[in-house]
Image (tube, rainbow, N blue to C red; front, side, top):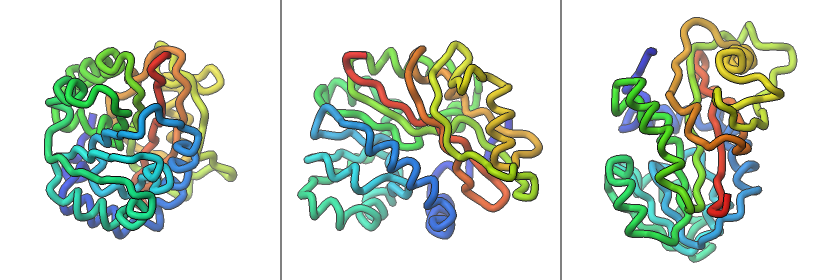
Length: 249
């Protein structure tokens, strides 16, 4: 497993996200398209790890009356309002920032806001950087669904990421796949595990060693998810998994 802690947050992350926002627009559009199909149960949202919301959908956020943005990043409230403030003002959505370690305090936060919909915005895939032990991170992430049982919640997170060579792209690459959660992680047309990883990496010209973000077991068996390519940098790409769990599922 390789790691790059400089990509997980802070000033460097925001500068990279700002300068690469044009490159990320296709991925942002695919996330927005997925969110358009999500009807949240509550008009109250706990947005965990939302940071500046660089790739969030303002259109979807406008569905809520009250959004609590929970993040440890002190830059988050200013940059999130810069990205989404005007749209949220139009929908009269109240935005509240809470500087708190949501991963550490998750159970307490769930108890404090028992009726809220929960969305993890590209944060669960960073947990391996916090823990720095793959097996421990994977074990903790595999229990997320259990801790959220009975809640309306969803997540977009990294599955794996690595270096790419645009010259090795397929003639007709696919940057979106619908999948179903299996015992070996997301499954596309019966392909899962390392075989699926190889197939997806090839779609974006993957080469060399790719990092597993320990997130393949977050969702329960049978959960429908969407896999979305994210060519973040000219020589580096991610595959994201987006999934939603209804309280009655």
